[in-house]
Image (cartoon, rainbow, N blue to C red):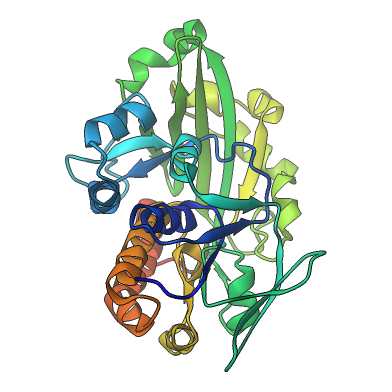
Length: 370
């Protein structure tokens, strides 16, 4: 059992999974999250049983109840554009916001606590929060996502790569009546549909399905061109909401049938909240991860293995990281963290490589490069 205080940075899927499992094991942990407690991530994600079943086993939760609480209507389409992922009969579309709310239950989450710096020494781990004094912890779990402050402080050589793809994502809400009129017969009860035109991939997914309305997400993606005005790998994080006019010009040139025609109609897209997504990828080196593990600092989820949003399995791997790390702490206490790294690192490496490969192949390329 754990004998040293455990601090988890980040209340995303990795941090919440490890925290919830530790709670189930009777092991105390504090979760620090820089954002507020308001509901985040109002969209769907695809979950596979290889990721969620270990969590349900630890929490002793019936799978049927889990699905009833979190599933989105519709089946996941095995799109011919993308090679097979680790899907099985248990794969389903899950509402991420509800999943995180469920994982938060009973945890000690300290909202709006922004980590500014982290230092390690022979005396332990010191964490400095914004506008407060620093504190000491025995174990630090960096689950703070793709822009991990823990990683930036302790493994600054590990830099994110932006893959050469142009991706825009939008959301829209329809009344049930309008959805039935435009989409129901064309989506064939599926939660995701894709269509490719040359190297352009269009995707529509159902994010929420209620008696009154249906929320959809849609994605336009293609490989970057030479001197591409839509490929902005150096853009700042707030720049995600800046949508160039050239994007709407490309939509004007699309020749597609329903349901894609209604969704990607430029005038409608202009009224939506559209984000410019960067396809980021990264894997911290084994030497860096081992060095941190010896100091009782563990990076998990996107903090250690960022996978592209399209083609990647980041959410599933984050949940698996959390469960496996909690199991390690139950069995080994807060020692021997190299054993955890040994058990997970190859899966991280394979996950990042496979995510990049799937992203390229779904756009008709052999690899994710210009």
